[in-house]
Length: 361
Image (cartoon, rainbow, N blue to C red; front, side, top):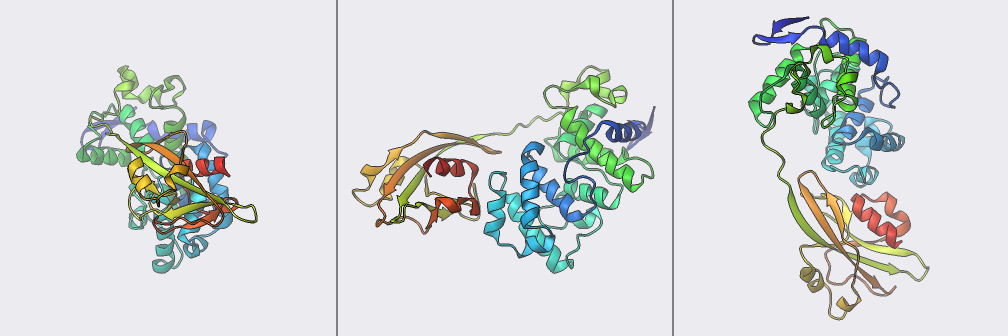
């Protein structure tokens, strides 16, 4: 059954009831951030899940809550500690925004998250879809999420021809998402509907190999009816990836008591690995060697290069190891400090750097 809505476009009125029923019967229900209306916990899970697999977040979420059980505890924590707990999750601007957002909630909202999606979107790092998820899950607000997975689901459901690389079609799809919401839903209905959208995109309506035979809304999916599921979503502009090579100077030393140490410097506040700690980074091997005092270059040992993928870039990391004696220091290098191998877990390190140093510990 369908009826005209949203500027004359025909929308399936059974979509919301079918999705809610399916989620309650077959959707995911055992995730640790489900079954709570605590905005702090829902917000934390939503931020962690942005562009990150559920399987990865499952190990980070409880560990983060153990150290920062409340928004107040997070606001009072140090930026370095937040980044250390986030290390390995990637997209580190999320962690910086998370910390800043917690501080704003405490200083400007009395430690209480705003109750509406419109108000939540004014907080640092909270976009429209994340704000909608928090408002729907915690307060039953009748508002739809529209993250990447949901864009794919709704584009196929409606055979939406708009180019989602452009702003206007994105706004149109957002309007259609609101038009598909269940009528007069209870708070539990909005929880099931919102979770159902997430579950459908994550487990059934997959990007490359959608499982249409298992889809609870197959009967009302316009892309499936025309056998054009793979055409959607339409996106003409594809991500342009850049390729870069970095040379990393891994300076190590063993102190008189036998402990292993590494020389780390804090990365700039902007750019790749912003605010994290890493070995000195150079644009090429010549620049790396030039930074060392005479006579030390002979001790450099090239290690196996490492490929590291980021959202917009492909990095080729070229580590060079330099072992110093217990009495030598990192002369001529940017400001940094020695960090014990046993304390690396307390520092915010990029995942490939953590792996390199672990191999040398």
